[in-house]
View 1 (cartoon, rainbow, N blue to C red):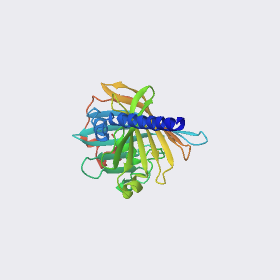
View 2 (view 1 turned 135 degrees about the horizontal axis):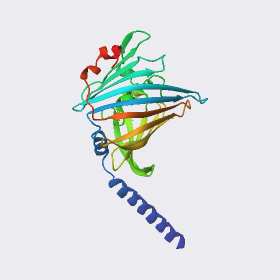
View 3 (view 1 turned 120 degrees about the vertical axis):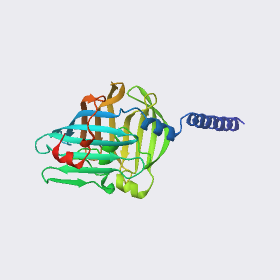
View 4 (view 1 turned 60 degrees about the horizontal axis):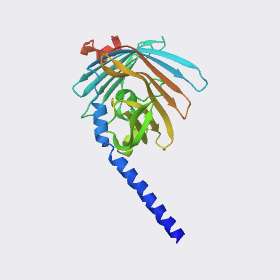
Length: 268
């Protein structure tokens, strides 16, 4: 009789735990709402900034690159251009990208050594950008989340750097996209108060842990929440990338001529 009572108690306890888990999950917002709020967070119409990239290989050897970038929104579409200023071996390199809501994005890379502007195709968006641990698509998205490439699922909440975050699991919608993005899955930790990504993890096409992205030094600049440091660690190669943003300016407008193939060649 005692064993029967214990068994009934165990079943009841397990059932209660299941109800608690289900109720906790039901209190979480829908993934579509989290993605919407994250992507609609105020990013400012204009952005000018200086980016210092620190590339660290597995032996600890460092390379420093400095670029000037400009970004502008045209409604929901976005244009962004990067002009590399140092070191001398990549000075003059430029990268232009247009992020569209309703069609394939456009990307161009100008390499001064070849005196040639090359269009980056959609099949190359998962390639790494100029020796960093970020892909062309990572650069293009910034702190936003792709609605067109992934299915999204809320898997819980966690605390990151003292801030409560929704944890979002993102799965490529097709095998073709998985191959193009070179990710089988990603996870995003999104601050529940400011709707900003604080951390992201990535898995390669085979399902192995690939890299982790951290967004640090988040504060308001010109009234807009901004991460002034990004740190990416590649778990397969032990390579690391730091991006540190300075001279951040959301207020000063600039000419649309910056977002042309001609400007890639001539600079800003």
